[in-house]
Image (tube, rainbow, N blue to C red; front, side, top):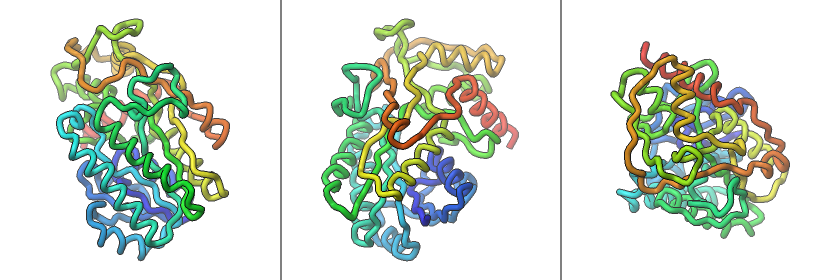
Length: 325
């Protein structure tokens, strides 16, 4: 298939592009490289551009004539979204509207959307399934809900089919340490902990120790990035075989607390770094764990790397490789 990938030079996007290339798909990546890196592209070709530039976007899609679009390009930092909400709605929501309009103008009818567990906010029950109310508690989650509402409105169109994948906490790196997280200012717990172990930070902050959880810290469902990449391939295959528009959670169905992740990082690295406890961070729900039965049953997706030590170990190998560069 010819597949157009927005934000494909970023962390998750580059792993999906890698997986697409390994399956023999023809890939074009459209990325402004604001948080992505051209060296992370192990397959396909890059068009440097921003989704706010509809003329360039339209030209790229008309030339390539994709059979499907996979959309990653977005701002993702929860705390930043609380400080700069309009920036998140402009980039995540308005730019997706641009993309959908250009797709419609050029009769591109298959769409995979990079959504998030943040759409659920603080769910009433855990694990949370896809039927749960969408009640985001931060602008990042709200910007993704707005896109899902647009997609739902397009669902009756027989010429347009989509899959929205709601990611839980994505972590880890390519098993051969070729690519991994490379954000300039990463806020992901595992990456921050590993960088602290490396000595890039003098301490790791734990935001909130008074949550209603067994050890007082937040609990998250961590999914390896390569398992998440596989989910995108299953979603593309589902749409290519005539599947109806749908939404799927992407997680393992169990979680780890912040303290458990910190201890795992210390075990994998063999380094006892400094940890400080501080106040809660705005926009953080206490517990987010996926009910992922739907994607397993309907798409046939089955995770290969459901092991927290493997997740941390692959991320650690990537971090160590980056230090040697």
